[in-house]
Image (cartoon, rainbow, N blue to C red; front, side, top):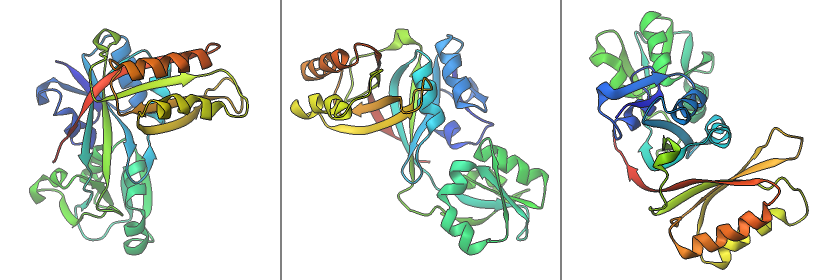
Length: 272
């Protein structure tokens, strides 16, 4: 099974993708959008994308790409994030990492390295590459990227602001892999409407049927200012009658827009 995720090798996305495919079957790109687009085009069997972090919240690029391309969500992977500060030596001028990783370590960086320049790069692994090639650059990433001290060493571990730091990844597949079986479901609603009580109308069908909403998020539709697409996750399968009934109501509310059922899936927690 050929899988595509954020690279280069050594990213947290790479580690999550290891739960889906063998290492030699994992391919890399540096854009979440390109992962989802490639899956929609049938170029790969699976894609693994970060969608939410417990500290920094949603990965908006992932949400927007899921709304733009037709794919199925077939699995959820939760992995704890344990950031380390990695460098060739104790002194450096720049700290490079993915913008999310820099934000997840904001308090540590402000307290310990207030004068360091923070450089956002495409991934944590790309930051490690920067540090490996330049002694004036440190990186934030998984401690295993330190190469056992041969060129890089770990200066500090567990530098994330909260010990509960974890990232939720979604495994996406071509539309043909769509399933209604699973303990969780995701879908996207574009009501193409705006009036008082609209959001309440979209949420009530789930409350009325005792369906727990695990995430609700709005993103600009791009059509006009104040127009939104809603990303909704629930703790129920699409195969359940209560879910089908609730979605029937949602589809009536969004009759001038659309509802995209991404699929039902189960969750796996992966420790690294």
